[in-house]
Amino acid sequence: MHSTMGERLAWARNQQGLILQQVSEKSGLAVGYISQLEKGAKVNPTIDALGRLAKALGVSIAFLLGEVHAPPYDDRAALLIGGQAWTVGQRFARYYEQLSPEERRKIELETVEQRFARVVDFLCQEFPETFTRPVVAYQLGLSVRALNDIMERNCEVGPMVLSQMVSITGIPLSFYARGRMESAPVDITPAQMIRYAEAISMAAEAQITPEELVLLIRGASQAHKG
Image 1 (cartoon, rainbow, N blue to C red):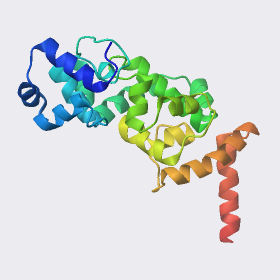
Image 2 (image 1 turned 90 degrees about the vertical axis):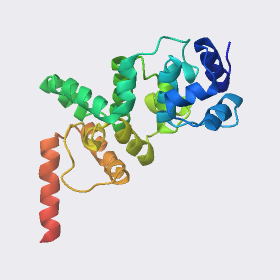
Image 3 (image 1 turned 30 degrees about the vertical axis):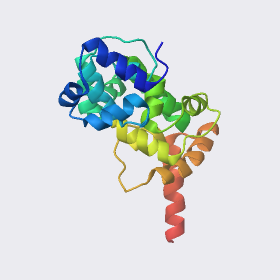
């Protein structure tokens, strides 16, 4: 029915009986900017701008992105947009704390891509009014196809995407790299984590426990220093 984001914006505005100036006042965005979005002159608004427009127009972000028909706007989504990383991070931390030792061990043995997919599924299940795969892909700067390829383990998740995932979810890098909810004791970049993830995957395939791997690393470190 409304094939472009601009058409969906204009439709939602007309449904509310609003002029551009009123949408500007409600969203805090410039009239010219909103007009360019409706005309298709601008096609990549930030997720913050989408959240503001969704609230002003009484629709969801998923609708503006063309994923669903126009549902009523949910104030919970507004709260999530305002403090998204903190909200998601806290909810995921509670989910992780409720897992059994066996389930946590299983996660530690997963690949980076499997843990990444676990988080994407968590977002879509726990925040369905805000997150769908197209919305997650948009926030990560990916196409839906590229996201699906990662989810289905047809390709590896790159360090830039992983870094962005940490930024939008508040879930620490240690979870994606090691399957643990902890802050890294040293300053480790996403690129370094990805490089070491291969060694961790090999250890998991060889059924080397995390404890055994730590002992091996400590032994090698002491031998290197000696």
